[in-house]
Length: 500
Image (tube, rainbow, N blue to C red):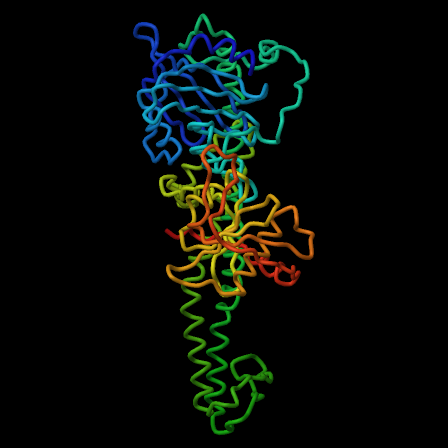
């Protein structure tokens, strides 16, 4: 990355951004103003198989489908911007493109090239995250909007010495796009584009093949199950004539039948030698109803016999076609996209239902507090950090709310939310006081004193350090810690939507 940045940085710095071309799902082409009529196209790829950065020589066609919230946000924020610099971040596989003159001020576009975790992130003032192409997982808050950007995994480790980029790329395919020529000032970028193109195409083919094989296998299993079921029905329907003859036997012996009989043994006059045949009866039915039951079963089987052969033939053809496609897919030179199209044309696979990224739910902004539920259902907010304490007290609470903090020791600000004109429930006040003690250095103490005051009596002195406030009233609450109460509170942490 350091080599590429040294090559590309001077070439692209200071150029205006003409337009952006999203390459769904994980790439972005920045079209920069060039010398004369020649524009420069900088490709930022967060492809999980092969993330990369290079100057793209060929034009990129615009996507005709939805592009998602990240690409739309980047296009809006960088409209009319000028690229100030290209920088490597944390001496690692991450680069920052710093833009001036953006619609909302300075913006930074970060490309993280960390293999499967590759990503694109848009940063605003203070290097805080505005939008990420691939949002955080449920157990991470690193890319939560509003948080300062930091590299994954903490502080970077010293990078080992290794061969130079040109030497690494020399062993790869030298296939180049037809009719393209390298930029004279960017030979390394040209090598990245051309000599990795074969790898990109091959890995894309492998990905498409894996996906197609999984879909074909699921359909093959269903088709095989359908064939097995139809074969059972074919065997059953083949006995329709025997059921009709059994009905005729019962009809001949109608006078000997009685309600309540479970079976009857009759001479089978329709078979050579008239052997005995045992027929089952429904003891709840009359003799006439049992005879009718046999003839109804015969009609049902006869109807099934007429259709099951056709259905079985079609099902076997479908199974054979699916197995044929799977066999073709195993060939080294197979084209998964062509096979996919043929499978859809033959009705063997459904059209792919692509999720519309425009409908993706935007992540909620990070809140500067944690939320707990007090005994009667009231909301208790606990600040996360010193800066968050200020945010909670000054911007996320109302004058009538109760503010709590451990006396004579640092700790989190705690706010017990109250409806306008309401008094605090004593048990809920004690709940909030327990949280104030727990989220302070006194968390192991058996007893502690806690400041309690209406929020309107809490003030922030000008120039005071984060988290430091003064009180113009209130009282001290002596708290004897109750482990059961604290356990109940910690077990009822929730993520409730913020009330106005």
